[in-house]
Image (cartoon, rainbow, N blue to C red; front, side, top):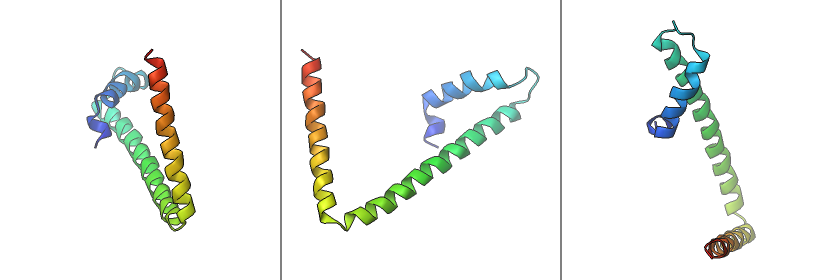
Length: 89
């Protein structure tokens, strides 16, 4: 539902899908194309969530992994800050 209410997604559907439709096609055809893309997107994103959750549960049992992840995240944030400071000069 979030993707379907996103203006960029709506513009994508309006700009891209008519290229694959005949001029005499009904609006049901466009709806079917949109439903297929939405279903495929949902399945892909659900798979990412499930795999990420399983991986997070396995890694949370290892305290050393948590410490390394926190340090990497901190270094990434510091790096983004430095890049932002350098680009604003």
